[in-house]
Image (cartoon, rainbow, N blue to C red; front, top):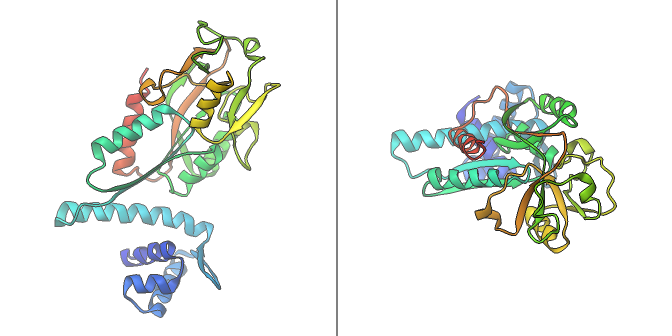
Length: 300
């Protein structure tokens, strides 16, 4: 396997056709096809599925692409450092559940290390997608929680995808409420107190089992359930409908305003919040910077 072959795979994946990639690389199409076939034979995997409309990545190809992107990124940084090349367009992606501290860490990373040009992605997404993203190296870091209810299933899923879970902190259960909610000024809240109010939670798509829920106590019966896809909608509904969501209680007023408050929930439970990385893959420089920022913003 050569660096040239890695560049070839990246070009084909980005363009979607052998012919377009050959034009970009200024080589003959048969030469490109032969080189990729040689790589596939060496690796004993099929990277691309050929169709009449072009090529698509196989699952093995998706995994290889993640590694290839890391190698290419490190190569660009080396060229910039040692050969005085143009500033590298820095690339980094993180997938996370809906946590304000994950956004804070992302902001800090960009401010301190973004440089003159960058292509960074912050994906607030579903729990199973976080695991898949990191497994395929679409994201280098994933952020989610474990607790006594979900940890057996999630740890098994995390291990099956070749990932490791690293604890950041443990949080006692809290409830996010609109500041005008009648419960907002309480020193603590019980589940019985919450019964009359709408419960808000994040959709989990095809993997909607309770174990993948972003909120603890997801199996609790509730008369009024609302499912949303993004944090802004959830916060708007907390305010507009006097709804609630059960969470870690970690919130940043400068990012989320003063209209949302966190009140302790009187419940014997916890959330062990941590980050995922791919096992046997050394975090890139920017992944390590982001992990360091996560630790900074979650120190308690």
